[in-house]
Image 1 (cartoon, rainbow, N blue to C red):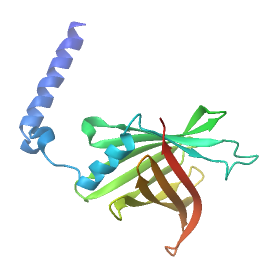
Image 2: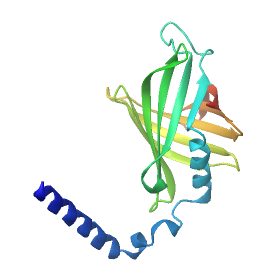
Image 3: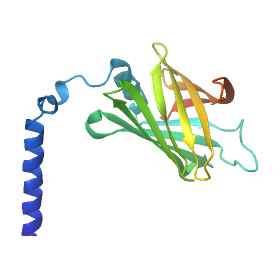
Length: 188
């Protein structure tokens, strides 16, 4: 136990020394790091309990039996990242997580990075940008375990208590072809 305390104390001292040596890190939370539109977007998604539900009845089938999907959004470390997940629902109850998300601002490239991981091993990465006061557009490249790649885009409009979101297949020549449309409602 004494070794653990000594190791922990050394880690704390080392971390403090590293932060002190970098004034931009020592500046702390008062330093502006995220663009205002990113901050506002993340505050919007995490409002209330951070859970948003979308009816899936238009797409329900024998192979897709879920009545609804939900997303849940939470702040990451220092409110500098946004963590989320998409889950499926049946009979009004959550039945499992389908995707996990991590959003972060890349300070060197000045862009909002979107990463997501699927339960089947698929990984996606891309960028989101503001297209208006309450609208955003994202585009992600997906990499599946079998070697296939594809691109999907989303355009979202945020209203009080609901988000209207259209997804698109993005073709190799850059055309956006409509896929699914969902209205995400803030869970009460």
